[in-house]
Length: 227
Image (cartoon, rainbow, N blue to C red):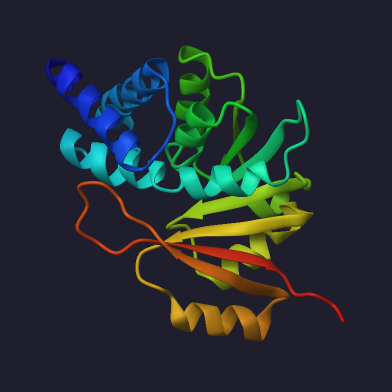
């Protein structure tokens, strides 16, 4: 990837522009540095099955960037002056989408959680080397941690909606949401969620991922209102 630095940086900047994200040159450079470190660590530690730099750029970086506009819009409705909002990334793996969120939304405190120690060691290294003071790594099972009281708990290809809600719902603040990144609309998972949990799907938002020819959507979930 080093030989293609300028090309990849331009492609990141183009993707950010396509998605309507306000990002500085420094933020785009941090995203590129993150991808470079992921590629380097992946040779030894097998953090992700995707090894090709082109696929990493699109399927990891662009895919995670695609949720930023919707996430920012949601957070802006809750943010008070100078308030730092907590976000939890469950089953974060190598920090996706948590690292991308921490870079693009510096007014958040992002907590990445994964049960695989080497993946959280990588996220801790990224936090230090990129000087992301708002990025935190937790090597644990999500259900074993004390509640984060987060405004958003997000997952990317982590589990069924039902399992995601059961394991992670306790970390969501009273006014907060669960946010699942999915491919096609998961109709059967939604039915099971409504039948077996207190959580309800409030919206399904289609996502456009630059350079990716595949369906993507965001599933927004909130607690059932008690009448």
